[in-house]
View 1 (cartoon, helix red, strand yellow):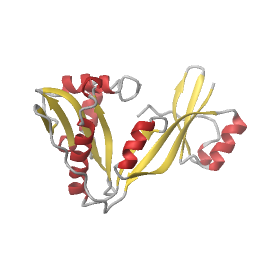
View 2 (cartoon, helix red, strand yellow):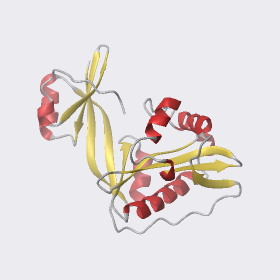
View 3 (cartoon, helix red, strand yellow):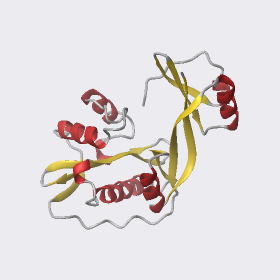
View 4 (cartoon, helix red, strand yellow):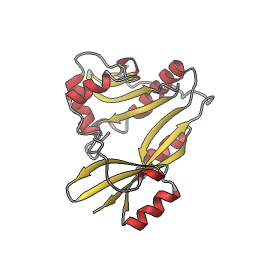
Amino acid sequence: MSSSSRSNQPLASVGWEPRCYRSAAHDTWSFGNHPGARALADDYGWQAERTLLQMTRRAGQPGLTQPTLEPGVVIRTYQEGDEAAFLQVNAAAFAQHPEQGALTADGLHERLSSPGLGPEGFFVAEIDGSLAGFHWTKLHPDGRGEVYVIGVTPAAQGRGLGNTLMARGLEHLAQSTRGADVLLYVEADNEPAVALYSKLGFEITQRDVQYTRR
């Protein structure tokens, strides 16, 4: 998600992974937030800035009921020519998310060519012919699926598009992974999303914490 650079801090020994360097600040991730990492954070004056939850929907759970589409709503796979409209929808849906919201055309093409992120698992929602939301899924080499990113424009929220896109993506992943686990990542402070994913059968399986030293 963010560019990597190594730090001279002795934090990798307990599962830390430096992610980026900013002027006047260092950021580093503790994957799983091991107790030893938290202790070192205190020792070196690092402060928890962000918590990312990994949530998993275990294999064997029943599929989601496909909601009835409103008139004018179409769910289809991403296709050539969707680039500009998708980038606009993505920027609007993730205006408060500096990494995903800043996705560029080059970044989109790079992701589309990455293993497990092909257009066959990339679903978009149209309302009267205009893109309004999307659900991009990912297939992992170990057989698991991932809700890679899902978003709906603010103007289209409240119409059930998120649930519809989620159901369609999970259906695709169930078929593509032969029913393996499906995971997703969500900000811990996004309480409405965490509650929604919990209702859909996802459970918290890991907490990754970003620490900052200023």
